[in-house]
Length: 244
Ligand code: PGA
Image 1 (spheres, helix red, strand yellow):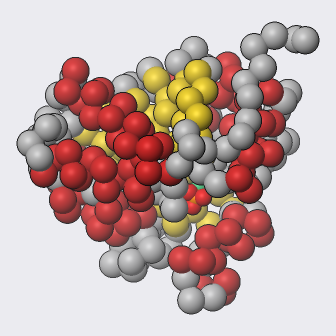
Image 2: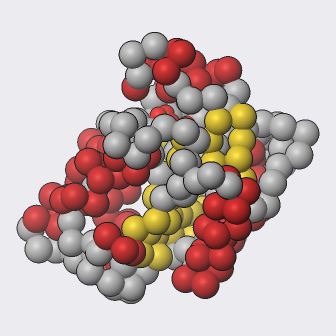
């Protein structure tokens, strides 16, 4: 892993956006893995600025989002499809048919997971996967557990995840109880991964992700096994490269 530390979130957002933009400029038909939540909003704004300045085009790019709530209409502003349209897709030249978000309203969610993995398999691998991290170490919505799934699947959200996401809804009751997420296999299959971690309250989980044991109880710790992970953060953490 490579750890880049930033003094402020504005610099972090710019650097993260630049990495994604570089990937698309180097390979215009890049496949990008996208994330939602509070973390990527600022870096998406930076991407939009660069697009408006004519510095990058997404005409040939494809995107695959990590996850989506189950049972939340896509017209709901907090659906991840709506989030992506509002924060990125509506402001750049990506083709609608090249943007993929799992369908959390599919009648057959297991079948939707298979359909999504099939598309990923045919169009992937993902060139650059953007990730945030939950306070409990989840990536996508792969929650801590005694085992993790490889494929795209339905998950029951942990109480702490619903509590953390309550800020986007009117009340806890409105936060969906289930989601569909890419599995660890798809995430780790990406050629390169950009993990963005903001806020000192995530310093401890980032330290455990970087330096703790690899465990399914901290799904992000599996990133230690991936050969190309770049971590960008404003947290005061170190990456310990030796046993000492
Ligand atoms: P956040 O969520 O960016 O809203 O903190 C990150 C995550 O849960 O993966």
